[in-house]
Amino acid sequence: MGIKAILKKEGIEDIEMLDTLTINKIATRISKKLSEAFSGHDLTEGDLFIELSRLKMYTAKMPNDLSGAKFLCLNNSIYFKKGVEFSTIEECATHECIHYLQQLKDEKGNVLRLRII
Image 1 (cartoon, rainbow, N blue to C red):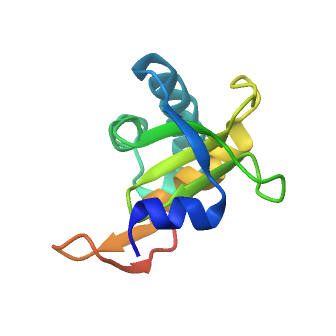
Image 2 (cartoon, rainbow, N blue to C red):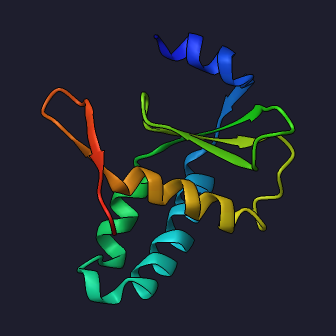
């Protein structure tokens, strides 16, 4: 199933990409938080920032039954519910970024399994 079909199935529509500054702010806060929380797991703040700042992030209309954010592994993107206040999204964004970081993929980009961080 292609990404357009998955987005439609999930009820995600009216998608707009976040600007680089906003993505970097989110990546900065989350990389700091995760590096402190998992200090014994060789997750440096700089490496985490690089990984998270490369994630595609969007706002979109989403069904009310979804949380404030959703990570889709098919296109390595996080979709935030339109109207969400970005100063308060840290919890749901952190949760979705952890899903991204847990992925173990093969050389073709297929998800093999999720790692335990």
